[in-house]
Image (cartoon, rainbow, N blue to C red):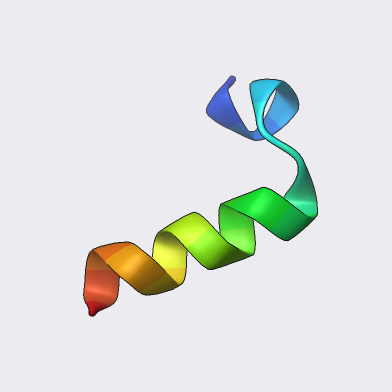
Length: 20
């Protein structure tokens, strides 16, 4: 669901920020 709303490029960046 969120994957469809957010782009793959943005998702990768957001996932990295969550881990950081």
